[in-house]
Length: 156
Image (cartoon, rainbow, N blue to C red; front, side, top):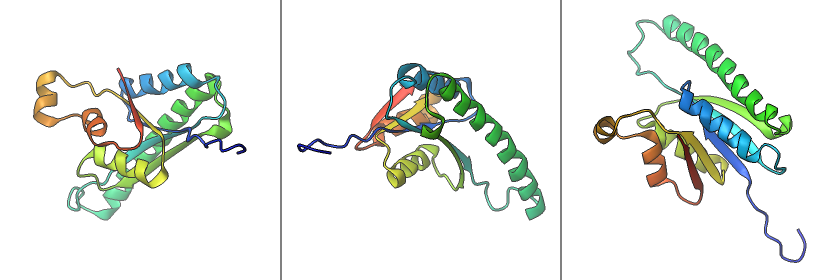
């Protein structure tokens, strides 16, 4: 950069699951920024590490993980294609799935953001009623409350 220009972080993290709200979040980013150059997007799905004794055998755990990972890979490829179809350069769109122990999915999303320095986190609003949200909390509310040094877009 010349003349003291500051580099702007244009890295976007879209945290997704298999919900329609997550699909809408991906579509929203594509619609809003698909034709704008310079943005890089990572579509992230966090696979919650099952408790140690959840599966009777390690073989069953591996089988489940393999099947689930295949399903996730298909979902992520579909979401990636949505962004490419909306105008994103294929080289600017990556996908990532990670197996993590998550006491809270929001904590895992924020940890991912902290490790990779995204300027924006995008997620779909979880389809909870106000009563359910009060009792259980929502991932999007927790991310909005605890995120620092980044923007958070919650897409309904």
